Length: 412
Image (cartoon, helix red, strand yellow):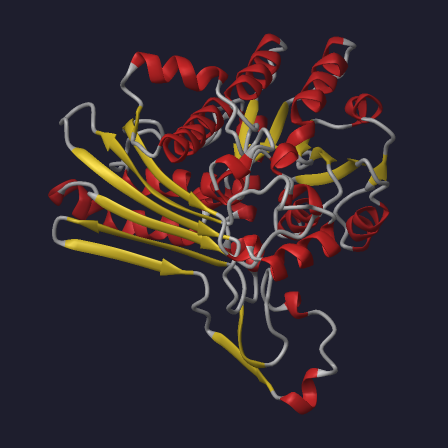
């Protein structure tokens, strides 16, 4: 089979992480790269690891005729403009087999509706990248429990968490560009994985119907003067003027449309997890059974004493967003695979080459944006957002959270 030629848009952290995943996936060639800053380091990685030509282009329009799929790994604030450029390239004759968008699809409902209309008007197949649904631990626990779920019923409660000490790049911290704080950045992961883990086997990812969202958002660590100054010095972001939440928690209620059963998914996300590094956690409870996963549990541990710590140059080689270079360290030998990045790319390849639907498309991405906006609305109103209420549904279509507007001081 001829390799599918990827054109990657974006030169930051997620693009680099995706390249680590692509090194483990057959059938993909990285044929092009586009970024606001020339992605020469990424191009070098592509060539060094035999992933493809890794040619750097000046624009999406110039790259589009030379690739089969365009993968958008660029910042949230640029998504609409980039999709417009992709569609213009298709209208000018570029023969694309599909387009990929990394989570979140957009910053709000208006933007998400806009990008979906654009790709569908251009008849472009689309895949939404939410890696946690593709994690092997997710796939295996569902396969292992399927006979139990068929007999006893699907899970009734899931609890998901994603936490680390804060993003790498300045735009992630800026709520007007990123779309909010940790709820926008990482809450979308937990909303998706919790929803999926509740879903009965054999049913689609949107089978369960969202009924309500209740959320609480806070600015805790990064609102304190010491840490606020550190954030300003390092990233130039001033949380005294435009703060965003660094902690969010809440609950989503879903309904099974066939049985009427209500089920619940609890979520917690933070940018102040000053432990080993990134932690993804999920547990679920069903009638007579349970499951639990935690990505900080590893078969490999390393201890580095004080005398040896000075020789450690990159703590993140052991674990994403690692907070320590000494002591007893948790080490994950293959994070790209552990977190589901390899499997989501394999799903995209199969979807685009076999002309079938991927596990997740942009319509699913719209639903995750809707749940995220409902969480912000709930926190602003200090009340549960009723997703069955037509007035709430209409409001969410044009709603832009105060935090996203740069007015977070009014609610945090």
